Image 1 (cartoon, rainbow over the protein chains, first blue to last red):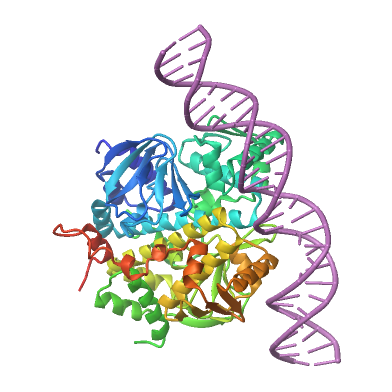
Image 2 (cartoon, rainbow over the protein chains, first blue to last red; image 1 turned 120 degrees about the horizontal axis):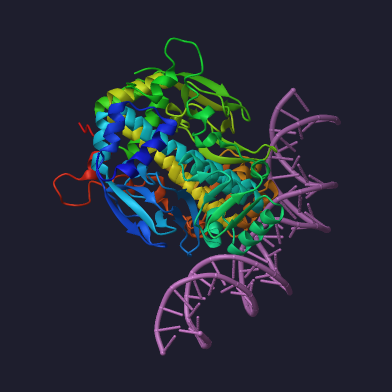
Length: 268
Length: 268
DNA sequence: CGGCACATTGACGTGCATCAAACCGTGTGG
DNA sequence: CCACACGGTTTGATGCACGTCAATGTGCCG
């Protein structure tokens, strides 16, 4: 049990939401090394095109992944909250095509790729869990793409608040009707593909209809069901609700469920 | 060497574009079992919410991943060409939140998860390659998201044609200035988050400026550089150009490059 | 020949971007 | 303790890129 235990245990919690790990595997994750550092808002944690040698675990704060156009416009493609290993896939793809930037003052734990690769080789179950984590992140991306392509401003903003609500609640960082999201309206506009001005007007609409309020980085949802309806939101894609995180154990009757194998190869 | 050799070898080619595999690992992939089937255009290969027991390798044709809104609107979130194992991640996440639908008459090779899991356990290097493949797909998604959030119709359409050009060329299915993309304008509109009508007008613009033509499922690029500029396209994110697929071997001087390990653990 | 899927065109409306100014809270230095 | 700068929010005026609706054209197939 090292001094990074707090952060690693949040990360482990995240993995356990979708994957089953043996106690050895859990111990291996909790004993990962890493050095912490603080990054001020607006500063890059990871820069595009540069090869990195470690993955970044968010300990505290908020970070975003950004796709940058050559003309300077930018688009947030992911938001990372404490407990997220925000570039776990860098283990297999150490040269990103995007940047990761701190949105608020953020504490990062840098975990060397070499150690991550080591435990993946020793515990194939961890490898599957990491792979699954990458797939879960991709599922979120898909959903965002659907929102961007086919929904209007209100639905997009509403969907973002729904998603973050569920993620924050699952990470024990608030409840789905009240949680801290320390973003400016401009950052919100980067994350929704809109203008800061239009985000502002949209938030006013949501406020006026009694759906939610967002001020000083605090989200207060007054009408969760209404918000969900507006956003056309279902949480199954996040792979963390009770009924979807482990659908495997309930299904089928055959001797050994194939999906069971997928989830944990070395169940203790 | 089984009867599926042709399709599997295309799949292997795809993997080798970004990962290094030993000859044993290559053989293992080429000996994967699977049964083929044909799917008519508009029919689902995979349906959302339903647990699947196999991954789908596109042998011939074109398939798309769709995010469906409850009101019936839909958004294409990925396009899959021959050689793509379009839901490789289903191995670790067998219940998708999207559908995969054939865009043209498509031949699919169904490869059981159990066999994929077996070779991953025997050859960890294959596991890494699969994980990397999922990460590459996610990089494409990120790029799409940037396009949707921050670019206008012309740039979006142009970017799609650029991306498919490079992918088709890499897969030996044409050249970047002339390749077959058997999509209707409506399907194109699903993939770009636009309306079929506006896709039509946009294509006319591209035609009028002498940039490219798209008719009867054939893309002819007249001005590749101009198209790239319009799309703000760089191909590095696809992980398949010469300079980005293996940046590892050229870099650094230290005894053992960490990234080398990432790429292949069992280089023969 | 009729039917059907797809492409094209036109008229019209609107959701959002754009530009620009004002407002507001907070920290800072004179 | 006020002046001021600064990041963030809010408001208004204006324009356009795109969606929407609806009709017509076009090639293919039975």
